[in-house]
Amino acid sequence: MPARSFRVAAPLLRAGALARAGGADAALRIALGLLLATSVVLPAGAPASPSAQEPLAATLREEVLMLPKPGPQGAEPVELETTLFRPPGDGPFPLVLINHGKATGDPHLQGRTRLLYPVRELLARGYAVATPMRQGFARSGGHYVGKGCNVERNGQLQADDVQAALQALSHRPDLDTRRVVVMGQSHGGLTTLALGARRLPNVVGLVNFAGGLKQGTCPGWETGLARAAGHYGAATQVPSLWFYGTNDSYFAPFVWHGMFDAYTAAGAQARLVDVGAFADDSHTLFGSSAGVPVWLPEMDRFFRQLGLPFDVKYRVVLADHDHPVPPPSDFAPLDDATRLPFVGAGGRRAYAQFLASAPPKAFAIGPNGAWVWSGGVPDAMAQALSRCAAASPRGACGLYAVDDQVVWTGTTDTATATATTPPTITTASTTASQTSLPSLHDHP
Image 1: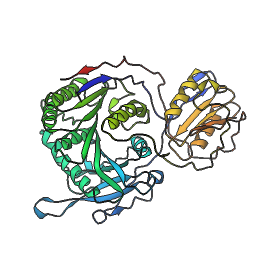
Image 2: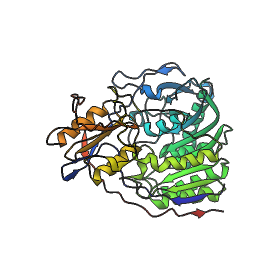
Image 3: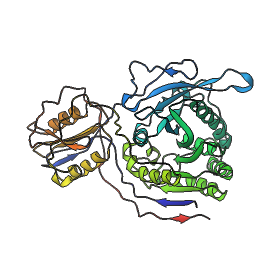
Image 4: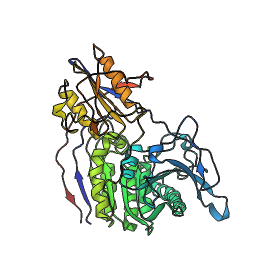
């Protein structure tokens, strides 16, 4: 497969809830409120218990393991805090492994990575997802390795942990680790490329989201990244898919173009997707709900090129609703925004974002043109209704759609808008900026 780069249109979107009251647009974003779960250290390979304040996502079959990484020269193994998500059923499930990024500061203070939006999409397609926290991060043992300016060696040291986690996971009877796709974001993207150079027989594809490591105190760190990518590419035999954007806060376009050019010039098979300007920062593409419709079609294509299935097999939700969902009303087809009562163009644009989001979600409307949608939380229906009522002078709103069905009956009712703690609200731009059409560049 020849290496290619191309550009896709990506609107400036923000995830969350949007509202319109009367004739004045007010864009609102409601925080999802999904908490990071944590664990305590248990014997190697055993499940770890989350703290009481931070429950695991039951609908995603989330569990936390402590996987062993063998120590050097007979030393005690280091335990790697690893999050595992599984689809419904007994398996064995094919595995996707996601490598995390690196925040500033002490890596041990970095929370356990839970990229729930990509996880949901992969679970729905039948894949289990594992995210090992590398040595020195979160509750993993040991200390962060790879300090200094040798970014190529840094990536290889991180790959040691990923290889150890893969080996440990291969012993689970509910996982099929014969054909693994490895993904990574930011520092995890660099780690993914380094792992690919090891030619592990069970790793069949790599996906790099904004991969790299910004070493601002190291002279020529941008050139160092390109040089490392070239060395990784020379040893890599499996195809890879790369995602970067023009407004990445860590890596300017010349940095990731330099990495990609060096990687492919060394003989590696790769395809680069330039998403243009995404939201406030294209570095956040992979973990954002608004990023899913940007990368998912390219991911679908990549998996199928690898000979792996990518059809949706299961209905997977981020959480269950805390109240029964109203029955479908057959008022209108779900995707027909023109049938929305009361709302104007702004509400119809927000409805399109609602449709693209993951359950649980709810879209509420009021007779004065007010609208609100909320998603990702068990009380999405109550949040949508209560916020809509607050934006409606008469305080009367009703649910138009919940999850994947229209429930509107032609009446407004705030009865199910039970008292809840108001979510955090920030203003958000609703202006969509389209990039140019895709441009293709073939590499020999």
